[in-house]
Amino acid sequence: MEVLAENFNTKMENHIQILYQRILVAKQIHAGTKDGYEKIKERLDQANIEHNEKISAFEAELRKIREMLLEPVEDVFSGAEVILKKLNEDNENLSGPISRISNELQFAK
Image (cartoon, rainbow, N blue to C red; front, side, top):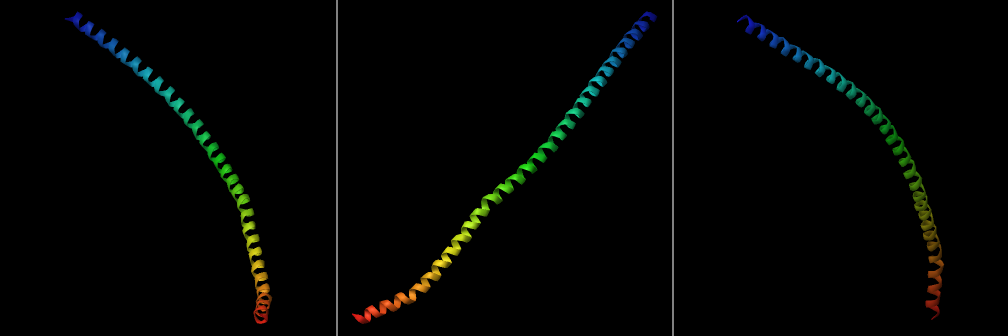
């Protein structure tokens, strides 16, 4: 009976030691993966910040390009409006004498 009890105790101690070693290995693995996770997260956060800065710079450049492209178009439209106003004024200035000459020609017939 004593031999059985000693064998049982020995087996239990062996199992406890094995479980303790497994726990230590699991803790080491957990610590390693946690450190790796934190390093990767920090690197990704830094990359995210850099990408956001690049996006802001690109958006600012895009706004500048759009403004540069739209300014000449606005200038062309304002120039075209000036030309149309001038043509309308010239048309009004010429319509009076033309209608007078037309009336004289009609009268002369």
